[in-house]
Amino acid sequence: MADKHHVQMEIADFGTISLELDAKAAPITVKNFIFLADMGFYDGLTFHRIIKNFMIQGGDPDHNGMGGSDKNIKGEFAANGVANPISHLRGVISMARSQRPDSASSQFFICHKDSTFLDGQYAAFGKVTDGMDVVDAIANMVRPIDGNGTVLFDDQPVITKVTVID
Image (cartoon, rainbow, N blue to C red):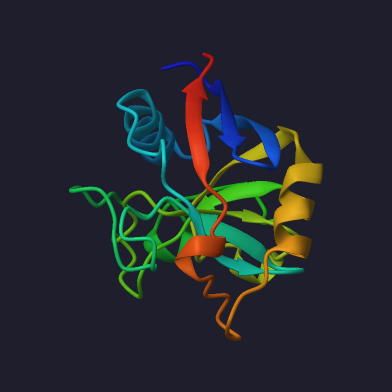
């Protein structure tokens, strides 16, 4: 597997987010994300959790933060014994998980603002290379219904297609 992979994420009514994934920093995570993208898993899913000035979260087939694919992966972050040099800066993509370190599956988040307090606790695996204006628009325009960032289903931005370029 090459060290860098490029992915495009098309968001209905918002535009395209281009990502560069770092398989050197998080090989298991990148392999899983690419596998899911290639099989069309993310197509039609949504961003179900949005917290302005923090992050936008998506990739849940249940659209509520409780779902995932049928496979959990090892959490590639320092608190789980894996050195991961990627800091959670604005535009970084990382895996969402439950309290269990190895519970990441398909849900991911993109940092809207620097969130370095997450470093060592979550598996960051790439960054936005183009389309931060799309992330900004989602974070600024979509209104959650509570402090946890919950977005009503009808208001959730739809990921129409995730395409692996290389």
